[in-house]
Amino acid sequence: EAQAKWKQLNFNAIQQEFESLNKLTGYGDDEASNAAIATMNTEIALASFYAQEPFDYYVQNFPGGLPDTNLSTLDASMPNLPIRRTLEKIANACEKYNTSCAGLRQVIQEDLTLFNVDMPVYHQRISEAIGEYPAESWIPFLRSHVIKGWAPVLGNQFETVLLKS
Image 1 (cartoon, rainbow, N blue to C red):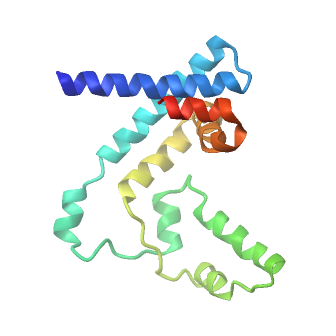
Image 2: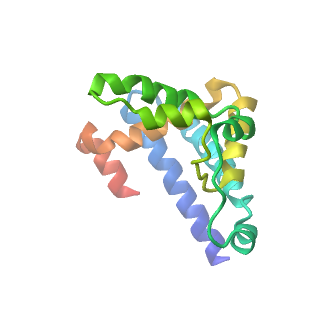
């Protein structure tokens, strides 16, 4: 019972943190509260994806770690995660920084088996969720985390919220 009470207190503190951060960016009370609730609902879903990861299976069957894979396999198993597109954009931007990124281009073009994905079930579930839910449903979660991530440079009020929780 004490552990359940602690979890609820922790949950409430995190939700309050997100609500306070959203208020500081101009959201009204109701809008900040709704954004915090939506953020926490997304957090719960992501945590459930993590809980589905078969860690014991990996340890027993892959003692040296999960096998490497290639982009085609990643594209097929996680179609809503823009892994290939992100790597292509990085490769295309290399010239701006006076580097060729020939190795990265080769990995993309030749579909080399060089990627090791930690927690593949978790990432597959995230990919499914991205495809299942409309983009608008991710906004509160992403907004809350961007604000939290930048809080230390946004000013004392934002930092104070982080220090309280």
